[in-house]
Length: 317
Image 1 (spheres, helix red, strand yellow):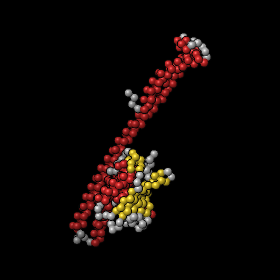
Image 2: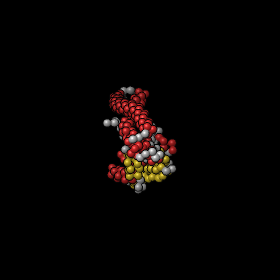
Image 3: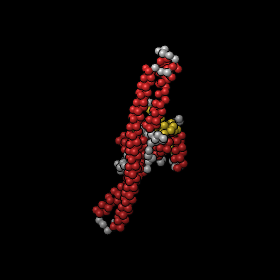
Image 4: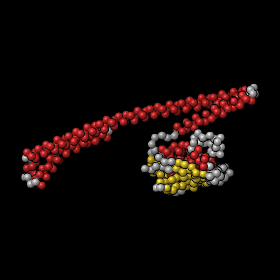
């Protein structure tokens, strides 16, 4: 049984070649009898002249030689395919080993960092009254650095848990997904006054689970920009630009500056530098990874105290 494309093609070529030899002989007999009027078709088939017999032998040799060359070429292709498949399998195993090693290393570092933070806290509590101000200052620096390291490791672990592999694309109704997510968020936070405006008939050729996470993260990010005391409005819409669908999530929150727009998607941004931005930096970072996996791009536009908008595209080809 042929195992790959080239072997199947070689097998099919051999069968077609066997059928082509008698077909070529019959065709030559018919053409000779009809066009050149050299006896009947029966005579050409069963009592051919030496000239006709020589032509048929040459046809057969040519066909057999073509079959041999074709099968030789396909055999080389099959060999290369086998080597490529083996290389892909080896690379997949190496990638899996590296991912497992990376995850294990992050978890060990996170545990070690957590232990270090706990030890420093205990040391600070124990020695706080017995050491000078300068020593307390250094202890506080060690504690804050350790806490920041722990936070970065937690972010790294969350990013490694994002879905991997090629998106399982299908025609998805994003407006229906957004409506479900809006209802879920309102039920989870009943004290918030948030209105979700969803443009109808928004569809995309994408992975439904992945895009659901994107919309969920964008809605949560928009809610973080809206003060608790303000009646919020979050909108999901779509428009066409240069023949491509552009989706957007807009809010009426506090907004952000043009300089902060790019840092929104940085999972490891310094919260002390952008204290007015949401503390959860994972949402937009993971959304960017998913959108890039779909061959699209994501960007932000906003104005201080006038709301912000996140745009994204998906390659549907």
